[in-house]
Length: 365
Image 1: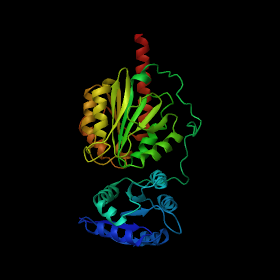
Image 2: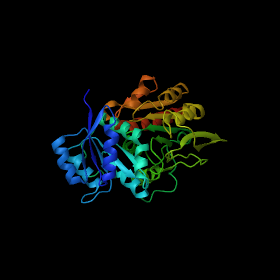
Image 3: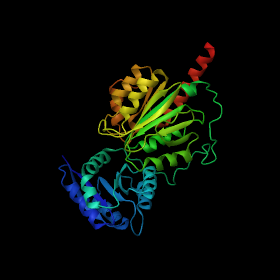
Image 4: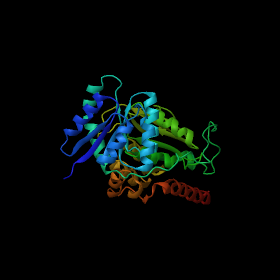
C-alpha cells in the first residue's frame, strides 16, 4: 500500500525534525520534505506533490494564514495546522479552519520537544484523516457573514417567537468533529433569532472553544457562547461544550440547564457527542432534534439512535458535503437518522419541520 507523503512546514528546525521523526516512524506515512517558510514550501509542494502538509501558523516572510489562503485557492490540498496554545493562536486557528484547513494540532508554548512527542498519536491520526478528507477549493475572496446576520448589536434576548411555546420546549443537539467547525457554522447562521436552543459538542481541545464561540456569535442571529455549568438553556441561544469537558443537559424544575463536567474520555473524546446525545434521549426525548455533522469515527451514533427511540427527529449530513463522512455514516448505519441531507439544507428543513409542528399545535388549540 502506498504511504501517505507529508511535507512539514515550520520555521523551527527542532519542530521540523521532531515532526519528521514522528511521521517516519509510522509504517503508512513518510515525511518527504521539510520547509522553513512558505516560499520554500511552495517550491517543495510543486516539485514533490505531497498528499498532506503540516503548516505552522506563525512564520517569517509570509505567515501561515496568508500562505493557506493562497494555497486553498490555487492548489487545494489537505492541510493540518500546527498552532500554539494561546488566545492569539486559537483565533488564528479558527481562521485557518474557515479557509479550508482540515484540522489542527495545538503544540505547547514551552517544552515543545516533550509536548510534540506526547502528541505523536494525535498528530499521525490527524494526518491519516486529512489524507482521506474531501478538500474544496476556497473562494476567490473570503466568505463574509450573511447579509441578514448582523455582526453586532444583537438584542440581549430574542424577540417573541412566532413558534410560540415550541421554541421553549424544543432543543437542537449537534455533534461534530473533523470539519465540524465550518459545518456547525453553516447550520447556525441559517437559524432565525427565535430558534429553539442549540447545544453543541464539537471535538476540540481546551483553549479553542471560547474563540470559536465568540467568532460564531458575530456571524449568527442567535447568541453563541461556551456552555457554563448550571446555566439555563434558552431559546435563541447556542451553547458549545468547552474543550476538554463533557456537556450534557438536565432538568431543573420546569427548565433545562447545562451540565459541564470533567470525566474520562468517551469513545476517546472529551467532550463526547455520546454524552450529550445520551442526555438528550434521557431528558428531552420527543422535544429533541438531533444533527450529526462531519467527523471521523462513530462518536454519538449509538446515542443518536437512542434519541430516535425516545422520540427525537434526527438529521445526518450527506457524504458529498462532509469533510469526513465517518460520524454521519455510523449514525445512518445505526438507523438513527430520519433524513440525510446536504449541509446547506439541514437548517431550512429543520425550521420547516418546526413550522409544520407549530401549525399542527395551533389546530389542536
